[in-house]
Amino acid sequence: MSDPLADQRSAAEVLAAVPPEVLLSLLREGLDREGRFRWRLFGASMWPTLPPGCEVEIVPLPAEGPKVGDVVVFLDRNTLIAHRLVRRDGALWIAQGDGRLGPDPPLREDQLVGRLAAAWQDGRPVWPRRAENIRATAWVARHHLLRPVRFVYRRLQGLRLKRR
Image (cartoon, rainbow, N blue to C red; front, side):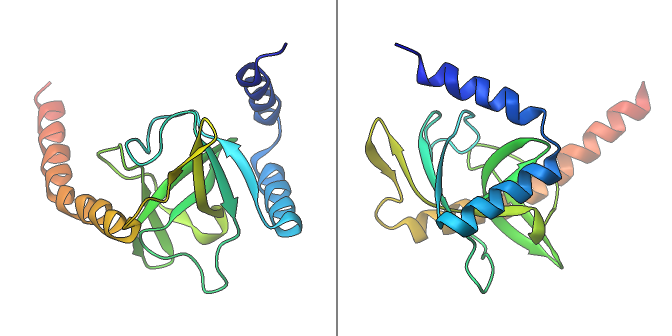
C-alpha cells in the first residue's frame, strides 16, 4: 500500500517544474470549473489556527474581493501558501501566517488563488471554529501590535551591521 504523503511529495516535486504563471492559471481554471478543491498543508506557519498536515478546502475569492482577516491561498514560486490577510496597502495585500512574527512580501490581488473555506485533520473538522471572526480579528490586531517591535528590531539590526 502506498503512502499518501509520499504521493503528495512527488506531486509537489512535479509541480515545482511547472512555471509559476502556468501553475497559477491551471489552479484558477480548476477552481473556476469545479468551484473548490482540497489541498494538504505541509508547513506550520498557520499553527495554531491550522495544524500541519491538515487538508484545506479552497474556494474562489468573493466577487467583491478578499477582506482583511480572510485566510487566502497564494502562489509563492511553485508553492501554495495559506496565510491570513492582515492589511491592505493601496493595491497590495499584506498576508502573514498566524504562527509567524512578520508578514510576507506584499501581494497583488491577481497573485491570490482563492480563500480557505474549511480544514480537516484526520477526517474531522478543525477550522473554522466557533467565533472565528473574533479569532481573525485577534490575529490581525497582533500583526498591527507587532509592527513597532519589528521596526525597532530592523533598526537595531541595521546598527549592528554598520558597526562591523
